[in-house]
Length: 79
Length: 249
Image (cartoon, rainbow over all chains, first blue to last red; front, side, top):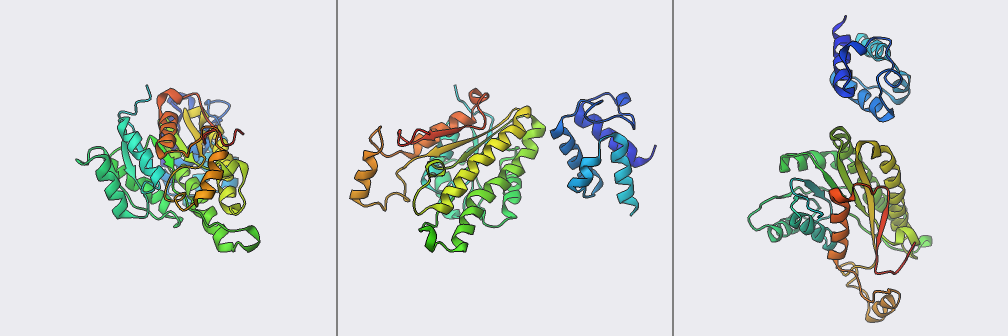
């Protein structure tokens, strides 16, 4: 797993207070990890801070799963 | 009841009559208070009067007409207090009165900026931490004219009505995290702002107030202390009208 993926997972575990084993790439923040809409906004803000990237609103809306977040951040970092 | 021991509060506009009374009351209830405003010397005097020994009182001047000032103020207040903010009191405000047909854009914009946009930015800045900590109190000081309107105050009434709508929205956004957001809407309070009224104006005014007197800054401060307390934990999105019965919306 990449460094970014590790860090994303850690942020999700910390923020949502879920077990690490549940934070699979396919896990949906809302459906599988018990997040509400405010949690997802806070997660995006946590990602922005942790990775020093800006995630605009329309991109943030499309980040539904752990993999979505990792992919988006990796793409930004590669750019 | 209504103790605020261990809590940290930021009060904007603390150099004014109502703001100073709010700061004094929150401090008396046990809170650590950070006083903000544009007039540093007056803030220092209010702070010295609240606590001559400087105990639990701090001064952080800020000019909220600068869009960057809100974020900076929240950071500065937390550094000065050495603790995150548990309570935000949006009290700072100004008026630029005039009948609409003669009101300049700059008078409209300035009032909307300082009385509505600045409180929004402060709410946004403190909410991040409050949501994370699952606790917090925001109390914004609007005005009865935000509910009733007032000739000569289209800008001020719009800003204060906006504050009420904003508060209801924020209350819905923050409710799931135990953060409450409320408004206190004062009626006519005896301050420098109302001292300029003529005797005739004053008499007419009192005739419209069932409780027969102007408000005291302490009347407003007590409502703020209540809404800031743990005991008010099931009240959010509300507007508490503190006006001697002048309007009962």
